[in-house]
Length: 433
Image (cartoon, rainbow, N blue to C red; front, side, top):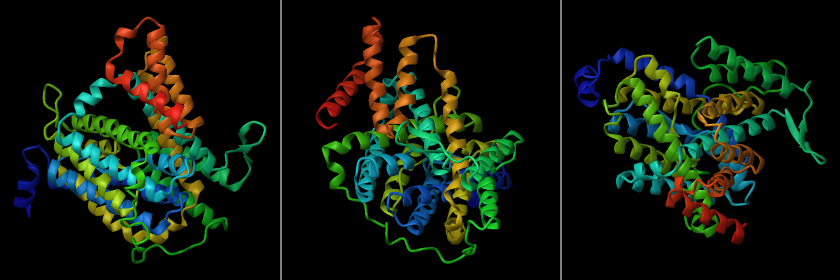
């Protein structure tokens, strides 16, 4: 077994041991396992079967981790991404009125495009063509979007006919427990405790049970049927012209999220070369896109690389064995469906808001002294949550970036690809709404 593992992962050559890699895998899993509760809860609001999405979430994560570990040999774990699952449910299905089957078709198509971009090695050209400011803005915009969803799920923010939104009943059980869950996560993270989000979700669920708001369904059971979501994506409907911006949003966010995560984790693991380039990068990117395609077929939103993988690397993980361990743990999680079904929305709200805080960190890198850089960031940051759409936030960001650079006499800072995309987004708003 030692010889096989060494041949697959070059563990000794990377200066690691099997024990370290296994510990790193458990550490990474603990920091990202909250997704097995959050994702089914979110996608079920789009009309999808909760149990089937739970299984699809675990299997998509497992497939992504195994491909990443065995083929790319990166200590990077994958699972359905936060932000894109919210976009899937609240913008594409509930907001735009598409069926969840059509939304899955868009996810499937975006995965295929991502695979082709990676295989043809034109990913770097696309990333370099998009201004860093817009990349930072999109991440922060998604963070604000997630914050609004978390606050809404906890009933901290509720609808109001006069003001659109207002503060909810701060004495209600959902508000109190969601708030306690969020602050518990922050406290645990500040103390360096791994799995803070998972611990918070479980403790808040237990508190809800003790207070009579959660019904006990058991802990372990045979996995639910995958049939309600398996191979249900409507690829033909996803070819509708109006869906182009949706497909672009799925692709664009996944592309930049994955690239940034791979770079950050690889640097910390010592995988990156002295010039900053990453070995086997195309394999890692194709592993990510393969997981997205497989996830759409199984019945879940875009699967992407998780920055939480850095926690495993910090624990000593340097090879793909770390990712393989995470994948096997996701497979084992399938048998905990009764536990997942008990988790109320307010128990996951704290984790959603916590993730939003992490994504808002990108704002620190924005050049706020340059108004032509700051204004587009503000547009994306405000319009993504207020339109309840990542796609619209991205589109308005590109348009505003081109407009302010042109009016500010800085048109030479624009490249043609950004200008073309802005023109396409303007055309989309004029003719398609």
